[in-house]
Length: 341
Image 1: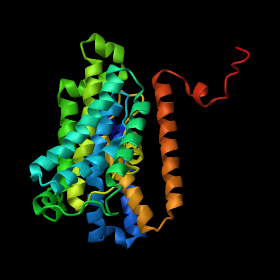
Image 2: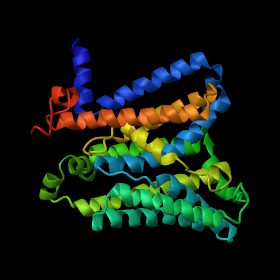
Image 3: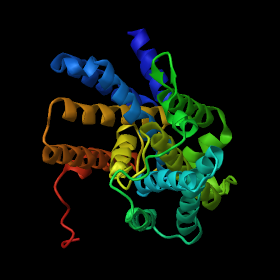
């Protein structure tokens, strides 16, 4: 009994209660898949899981950073796609691999800076800005790729492909890199003042500014970080699969959005962790893998993903109301008669 209390106390003090629940669900889902589908533990399937997890986790680290301050970025999938294309075009133009790599990263950083300027400096709603940038970027991708074949750019030098295809002990190097990046971000959140200030700013912006935390500057750099990480994922994934086309990153923003919410983030800000981003990405990736292994029709996949999104948003909304002091009776009870009021 004492051990249970200590464990609960630790999870609560470390703000990892929802993250632990998500990791538990992930474990149950993995066990269920291994029983229902023997192909789940096949080497090829495990390798494909690593390939899917790595870029999603890298993007989720940037999205979770924004969640902590009460913002999000719906342009990450498009940024991932256009950054891979930028690197591929640089390689086709004869530029060295390091220059091509930096060209892709710079593309994402510039888009992130644009998002940050619009939101932090001009005060435009982050949903409107990033949704608009999503459509603009996808439009640019279509224009750039209009004269290319369906597969897009496919001729890369071996040195570039090695960026995404190296392995350590049979494990994908890209997957290991993403895990190390996640650990580094979690350490930053737990051990530094700037990391902890993200949650403080998201939870109580007025109090955070009163203590000297620069809200606008922090918002700007969080959007730059999100764009840069999405670009990094796009360039590394381009190197991994050996092609850059118009389809990379398409629809990814909703998967990352769901992953961050399930992993403990909140659209209201003030909560979340990078360990939670990992937990959420694991859940979404395993769910997608389950669809494929069980041959679930694509239309039903969309129904399930949409239902999960609605569910986590509703739960998040209820938790925000509870945090503000609203009793359960006023949240789940009958609608108030506003006309009589």
